[in-house]
Length: 265
Ligand code: 1HE
Image (cartoon, rainbow, N blue to C red; front, top):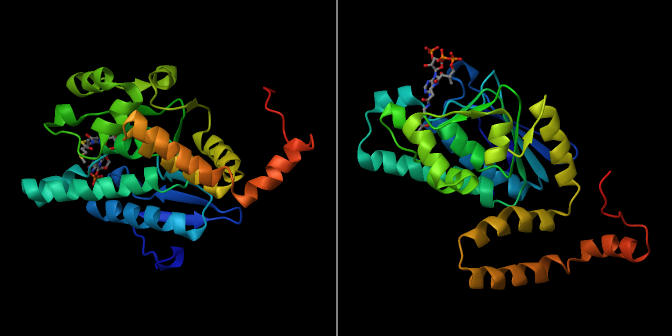
């Protein structure tokens, strides 16, 4: 089984600290971190590896002023792909983003600048999105003569609703600031998205890994099921998670009155 040290990365960097928090950086700032086919394969590799490597949370960030400019339009133009080629490429995007969303490791995206097209598809596969005042979201596919192929019709429509997604694509509407939070594109609007992403990753990493697995994989899976099947699967998952030996210590503390009480600060 491949481990973190076996990864051969060109367009991404990966660091894991002593707390088990991975920092995955998009590292092609000269091209505004546009997603070429190499980057997509590296995302597949990284997010396939992290869950098996004992990583407790991941921060997804970017070098340069923009998070991600989406599909590498120049590569796409030069490759002059056939419909089948592009369909297979989309499957690789889906593979990468599904590994993120369903892998069971919390992924916190630290956003800045452009989060557009496939960049928004990438961000929407994270579990938590943190933006700053310069961050903006768009789906310029409509204006480029293209269509989304990296899961936006599922994830972006899921976050903001289909009417807003259709409006973004038809009219080129961009969202930023508080409005972006209100429509559901990000959960946090802060001065320093990386610092906040770090704090949130540390908080998530303090949870038990099996609990985080259930949160970060179960909730997404259950959305794909009928309510009846989801309730069944939820009960089975809760049977495993809520009886895990590692939870006994936390329950013991609560029972003895020393566990944290859940109150606003
Ligand atoms: C790129 C890309 C790219 C920049 N593919 N090379 N996405 C878009 O329609 C967004 C396209 N990009 C932009 O609108 C702008 O580049 C930005 C607003 C993101 C940044 O602007 P700026 O002024 O900082 O940079 P720039 O001068 O436009 O670009 C700098 C370099 O990055 C330049 O390369 P250079 O070799 O001439 O220096 C650009 O060509 C390159 N670059 N963005 C390739 N996207 C699965 S389907 C998904 C479909 C989509 O994602 S469609 C949405 C595509």
